[in-house]
Image (cartoon, rainbow, N blue to C red; front, side, top):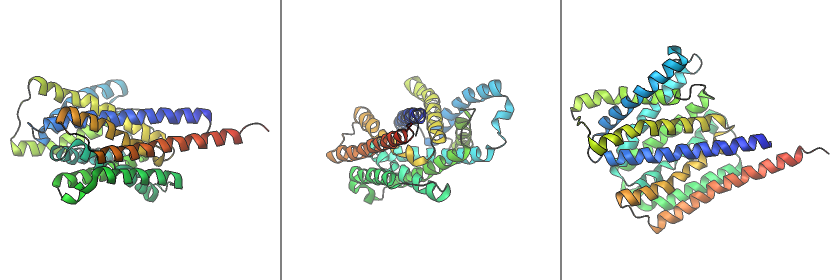
Length: 303
């Protein structure tokens, strides 16, 4: 890995970390809103507001043809459906279980994603990356503890979100580098509205948000857009999915902090130990890439 490539890799890590942080913010807002509003209403209201931003921007800057890219349209559509279904089950999970427990389950995503990448994309997973991912997974088991055995519907929703999130990562790799970044968000937003609108109309449970709640509803679209774009850009730029998958674990820090201050969820000793293991796995991945970079630079020096 050259100096330029290593710098690009560090930049990609920063982008992925930003995406995960934005996802934590959106998850927290949605969890807060589920106390007063139905999941379909949150999805329809927020993502419709987002489409009022995305559609004019893409149409005016790139033209209407940009909504259906010839080479990647099918992958974008599949990703939109996968992302929308993942969002729905994820918000249901957030309503039923604490933030730290939610991320404890969702942190299975890097493992599932890397395994799917190996079998579907035929990507190589070296022993060092497997070690980092497995250690991170063990940290998740320490963090989640016996709660996996409770059989709560919330944990089943969270496990479903893991499968959709991993599929989403594979589809992003299929799409590759994207010239219209907001297209990553457009399909997920549109699919969310199309899936949830009939449910909302059937339930007849719409309650017009006001005051602070209205501001929270309107804050979701730009935060989710930022997360979707950052996540998609990061996964489309790396040579192999396993290179940045462990950085997903950074969400546990923010989830624990926000869970404590907003929902009075006090991190347990188990949570702290599990988080330390997970963070250690991510740091090991950074160190390993640095070692590979140094070895490559030395090999390429003039003799």
